[in-house]
Length: 95
Image 1 (cartoon, helix red, strand yellow):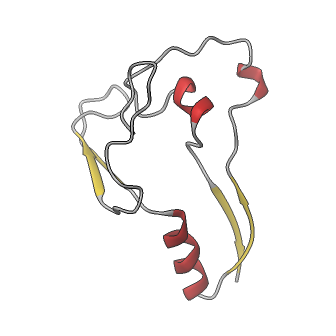
Image 2 (cartoon, rainbow, N blue to C red; image 1 turned 45 degrees about the vertical axis):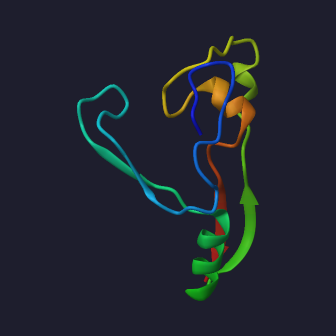
């Protein structure tokens, strides 16, 4: 996703699983690499390793942020972006 204006734009295919390298991360002058994966990749790999998926969550921002104004931001994570698309998913699995 490309963000920083009121529009959030897809820059590449969801199906393209590639590393994304940032030259700075969370305001620090440190290089960070995040890996773009499809949800199905995580689920299939857990199943392949013998895990059973019990639950999947895609939480929305906490209601404690309801009154907070969310401005478009160029940050990797922002409240504005989190209100538009899930920024985290949680898989509960058991072996």
